[in-house]
Length: 375
Image 1 (tube, rainbow, N blue to C red):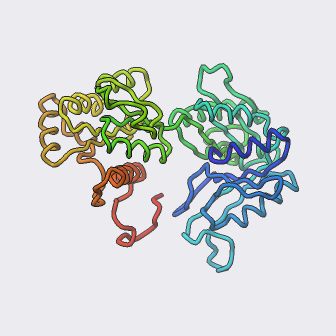
Image 2: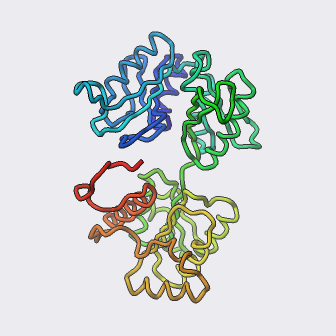
Image 3: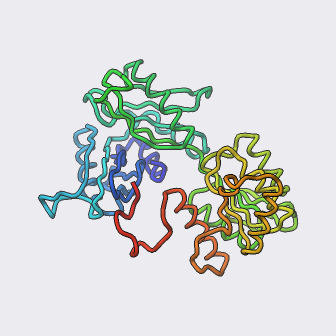
């Protein structure tokens, strides 16, 4: 819902009902991930996408039906072996799409959710998408433990709500979306009740170390991919906001000191990407010593030539880092795309980050067999 929430909130504020279609489950080579959303507006507008074009027409019609009947629907879309013209995904994947009517009456929490998303405050929405008809569309809005707002909404069953709340907070901490299964009375090992959890965690962080021309391109790419980007360098003459308009912030500090302070403040997690572009041992060796010993990190890449890489490895070993710790680093940074310019290099770095995150091989798809999208 994140991509369409501004448009949805606009209709909601005006009291104009809209249909919200959300991908809540994917199987095989599905083109979109859980949480992808599409709207059918009060004037027949279509906003967003759930499949990249394969089933949007059918979802649009279902959205109109849901608006007319005021009844949420969970619909599965896949390839039919019996009917070549059946609505489905040409890629062979399967999507479960939940369609519901959104209005101030059906979704009173939407305004507060949209505000939290804009303010980058963590919040999760847990919606019953399958189960007893009286529970369909019921939802809990869950914030981190200890927050003032706590939990809004509910299913009408304290037992179900308690089970959902605890599980949702775990997903919110990890920034994950998932469909959870319970018994119809909230039993954790039961079946019959499916709850889709959409986590609106703050954007993941990318920290770019080294205020060089390549850093500007990497910052722009990071922002494009949805990261909150910080550029850090110890040299104030180079680390200026005007040189890095694609970054959310520019910090003047020794890189290893900044990273250590951010880690101690709890602002580094398993989604954080670190791009070390300094290729100067007085900066990158102490920085990498901190980075490679972090308990959680999403990506660590370090720029440099083969000679720089070999020298860096030797210096890190002198500081006592193990082969396993050094093995967490991608160096030289990026995939082999033959990149030359800063922009091309930024693409190669982004490609490596994406491949590591999703388990891609980084080879031409034409040379690979099997599904395009990993399970």
